[in-house]
Image (cartoon, rainbow, N blue to C red; front, side):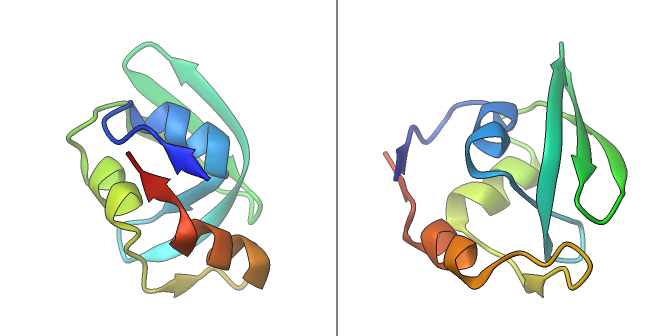
Length: 91
């Protein structure tokens, strides 16, 4: 899968349905709502998160560089999705 490199993180999260938390845990995303400068996420483990929709944010950097410490055990992110995420190219 190819994704443009410097698009807002809200659009990237909508496509790949993954979100890296502050401590590096990769969560599966159930729903994404873009509301102006903010994104509201609901993860598969039930967390509701409100983040800024900034191209230079920590989330955008972590998604572009494909950094994460591990997958959330509650979200049960499948292995094929992690492999597809690691093979995603940002153009």
